[in-house]
Image (cartoon, rainbow, N blue to C red; front, side, top):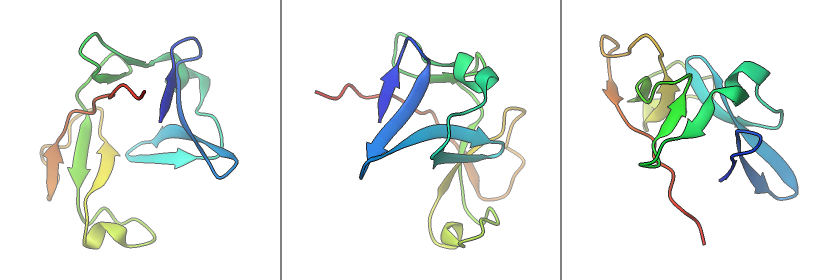
Length: 103
């Protein structure tokens, strides 16, 4: 994925399509449309390369059995975003999302 600090967009170019990092709370996804302006403005990385969303690095969770329509989370973890905390949610583990330089 590529982070553009000028536009605050996090995206991936795949097979000729640009896929943008989006959170449709609580689901985190790559989608073929740019995120809402409020989310773009609040997406950045701090000096430790931690993903900051809406001025918080907390709120990301790896969860199973999320009710995703494809049913992938029955057998694997899905990245979710619960800005008000997901610690009370069954089968969720808090995670920190880091950016890794790509050369």
